[in-house]
Every structure is written in C-alpha cells, then in structure tokens.
Image (cartoon, rainbow, N blue to C red; front, side):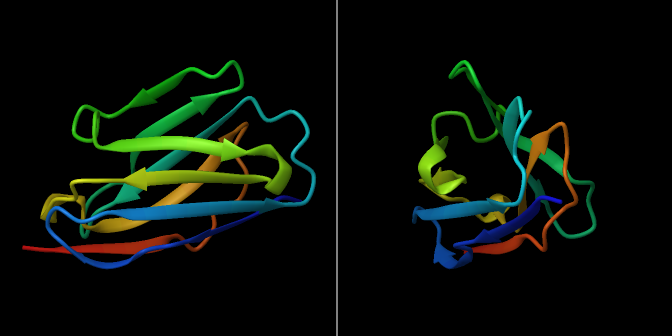
Length: 113
C-alpha cells in the first residue's frame, strides 16, 4: 500500500515562494503520472499540475508560468515549486498518482495579502 505524505506548506506573503514535497512509500510500480491538487476553503479539489512518465507536464491556467512540478526518482518524491504566490493560491495541497493511491493529509499553504 502506497502512503503519500505532503510537506512544505506554510504562511507566505504575496509574491513569495514555497516548495512543496510529496514522498511516496510502498510499492510505486505501475504509476504512470504524478499530480498536485489544491482544495481552497469551501471548494472542490482541483488539479494544479501533472507530470507524466515521458516528461510532459500540464498546468492549470491559473498557475502556469508560476508553478513547476518535478520529481526525484531516487527519493520517490515529487515537488511543486510555487513562485509569485497570490492570495488565491491559499489552499490545502495534495499529491497523487495515476493510477491513484489513498490521499495523504495534504499540506496547507496560506498566502497573505
């Protein structure tokens, strides 16, 4: 059973940066892609960024040019570099794979204006 643990969230001012990390333990064989999601207060969880095994990436329009998804296979880790943060980026951030695994606890990001 794969366990996902997100970290790196915190409180940052508008325009600041954070780097989120997601570490996966257990059997990750057969995973085709990795994704970051965010869930703002009172809203549905939304896809933010995707990284496919062939190196392709996709981003939500709201974060394109500001966020970068990457991975370190030696550490079973996926990262989300977030720059030029805005108050509307405030949310709990989660990672998951495809095929999906059980959700982790997420990491909270708060951007103050």
